[in-house]
Length: 502
Image 1: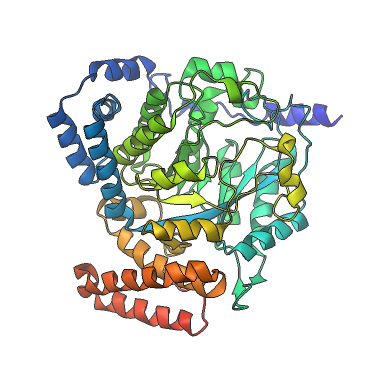
Image 2 (image 1 turned 180 degrees about the horizontal axis):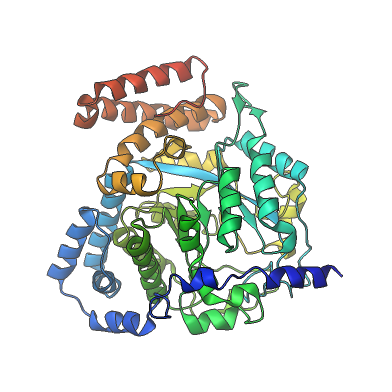
């Protein structure tokens, strides 16, 4: 009976007119012939061309397809080293020296799809299905807060039980939770809830906006049409390539300011997928004047009941992974870039230094796994395998040793620096100045409220270094009111106030 009801629900999900309005002469923007042509055309690029492209990236301009294709075709180790160094320069120019932390919270693994690489797929009989109640979501949120997190991304399978109404209720449940910090006792809550969810019609997206979601994240998984068809059966909701491809177009039209794209690397050739993400960016810029708020580039890892996840011929090596991250950083210089706990600590350490801006930590991907550790230990219940299960404090220590300041900032979203506004500030390298201020304020909170002694030993000198840099920057000398407010808020946090931002 339930399967019959779910089937009827699924029949009404896709709204064709909300696809057709974005097509160009009836076609989507992923022109495969054009992508393959540009990749072939730009084989063996000369060093001067690459140097010119790197200079364009440093001017914080989205690269053209030919320019990205040229970077992807570099073979010289020396030039790749220059690319890597430039990627970090671009990141620091746009986002300064901070790494933002978040945690994923998996709310449901019921799903009507049969994606060949995913443990949540409907045909996987090894998966134990569960959907969290709102009280369970609150308990999970409490556990995450006790680690020190201020930002969550909620993850849902595509199913009638976890529809937009459930998502909206889940968001409100998260925002309702407060917990005392373990060291200071100061009250803490989640300040930003992002969503990783299936595509939906504009009316449903407006419901999520009203609930107060932050970034809406939908990954295309693969931009290659034939591969997409192979891994997403045609009789499923996810089998409609264009419904998914235009999910973020609909979101922007529905009034969501920040959207996020991504691909699952390992399903098809990584160079093609990088080009696909660029084409996605360019079409969003063409139609709305803004690109994606963040880019994600997870590599496929073994998943429960999925042979493809372990045996794909397109698995990406560590060396190629570093290359694709650097090229994405240069191609879309205004976007945040998320390196996830799918990756092992060793490769995360390297890739963070190639221009990443965000990462998750203390990650648990089982349903209810933060408050019920037994769930997480059972590999048969996982959507995929994580490579870095370390606690938040451990990762913050490592990031600090690399010279980056940890941030839990959510200021931009609450000050109206979203959508076109933030894109303009990012392209003019102004938003990064606020990133620096708010990183110091939120890191000050963390060091006082949550940090271990070892982390404080690393963090206190680092935070003083950041303050000295702020005090010496011409940008802030020319805006004494901003500098004065920062000094005042930092002092207030030391005195016990929380959640201050600029």
